Amino acid sequence: MAQDAVTDAPETENDDGVRRRDFINIAAVSAAGVGGLATLVPLISQMSPSADVLAESSTEVDISAIERGQAIKAIFRKQPVFIRNLTDNEITEANKVPLGDLRDPQSLAERTKEGKENWLITMGVCTHLGCVPLGAGEGEARGEFGGYFCPCHGSHYDTAARIRKGPAPLNLEVPEYEFTTDTVVKIG
Amino acid sequence: MSFPWANEYKPSHPFMQWMDEKLPLPRFVYNAIGAGYPVPRNINYWWNFGVLALVCLALQIVTGIVLAMHYAPNALVAFDSTEHIMRDVNWGWLMRYAHANGASAFFVVIYIHIFRGFFYGSYKAPREMVWLLGVVIFLLMMATAFMGYVLPWGQMSFWGAKVITGLFSAIPIVGEPLQQWLLGGFAPDNAALNRFFSLHYLLPFVIVGVVVLHIWALHIPGSSNPTGVEVKSESDTVPFYPYFIAKDGWALGGFLFLYCAVLFFAPNYLGHPDNYIPANPMSTPAHIVPEWYFWPFYAILRAFTFDFFFVPAKLMGVLAMFSAILLWFFLPWLDRSPVRSGHYRPTFRKFFWFGLIPAMAVLFYCGGAPAEEPYVMLSQIATAYYFLHFLVVLPIVSSVERPDPLPFSITEAVLGKDENAALEAAE
Image (cartoon, rainbow over all chains, first blue to last red; front, side):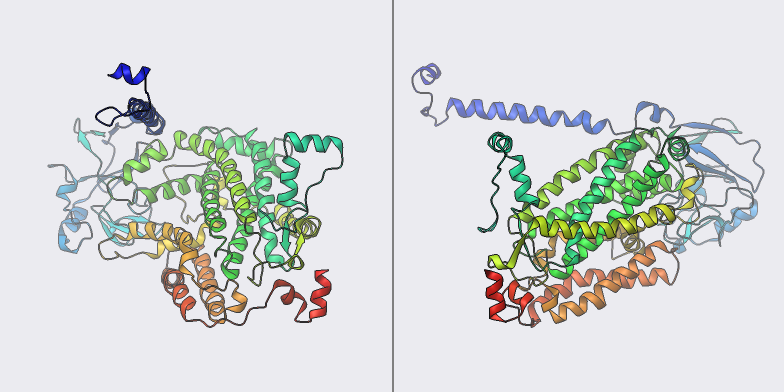
């Protein structure tokens, strides 16, 4: 039957109403369409972070030299990370705040590792529009709540780096990290 | 299409006749910007800004191609290569200042061009497509300007890139992966700089393409005019060449005078000193603002300091900022008054001069000011009016307003009702 359709009457319908040309037409357009769409995968994916950028996505920091009350800026994924050794006073202050008063309720314990509550490790990236807040460097303004202060749009963070005042929606992000030894932190 | 009385292209030289048969490009130019395009005789100086915008685009492309011959889009050397252009390349300082201030000049011209359209109702039927393409050009211009500003890789470049791509992180769920995809990393770096350079070089040519469509769409109904009354007869028009070529040349002289005054006497006035500090991902400048031409929209972004029902403040700011421009796509259907020109619309005119213009002025000012009171509250009021103007005021005014009587024709508007004068002109 198919042979008849080819040799005798390519334009006429078969018994089931399907023309051979319709099938070829749909198959060809579908193949071209799927093939065309498939080329979008590499074209779009090439813009995602490349292997060398991803390879920088963990970093080790020696924290042995940071005294209580001091903080340092480390670099993780080309962005600043604040590593802060909290004083007892700062820890008490952070624990005093009722969670209900917070915009993004989290306790200090949830934001630190067990037994290492004095080590507050957060991204140094304001959750508003990504500026670097002040407060990790010696003598920098720490804002009204003694933690960090973002000068761009006036966000104040407390001693647990939680948002307390200003436009930022969330607390400073706590990156994934672990203590590989007592004095070395692996971030990422 | 053109009016039936448009001059016809009749090449006299045999070579041009030969050319006209093989590739009628001269005919195309003649009909587009030559004697073959009849223009309403009454268009005023606000109608010069389309041609001026075209000149700005050409200026940016020429200076940009020159700069790309000396600039290196690599995060390690981009800043140094910019300084190399400024200090070592012959005339490099001129090319860079001309390009940087050319961007500002382009936006001055385009804002006037857009507000001309707002006042004279140029967006109305039958020119909706002209308007829609114009909004597309404006969006492309903003993207191009933003990416160009990142290229010198100074502090403002870097933090501008970070904050603007950070806007996308406000989108729920896909926001952060989207930002990383746009940047090719977790923060602006070499990957971002390279792609911004590539796109900054590409987009102006896309703009050229859309400009061709914009002019094509314009030439189907023909140019609008200050009365908003459509062309009725030959006495209403004069040919583009020589009349408006000459007038545009005069306007171009004035434009170049002002442009060169800034270029040669205050080339850094519109820039930010912080951008002469190399990009430093570890430290943010104390006061970051975008370039002046983004201020109104930046003010709208920052006006949302509170959660809007269930939408968080940050996302709401981003949505409002983008809607502020996307709104313009709906303008031809929001303003339904059959009268085009603001000259004959007393109520519309009041809202335009005492509503929209002051609101835009406030947004302009607040966008460049620090995010403190009273600027936040002022931008909130101005933002509210901005949206009310387009979404509420224009639809209501267009249905309740009683327009002033329109002139019968453009000729009558120019020469008065004196019939003899009108007849003379018709001859």
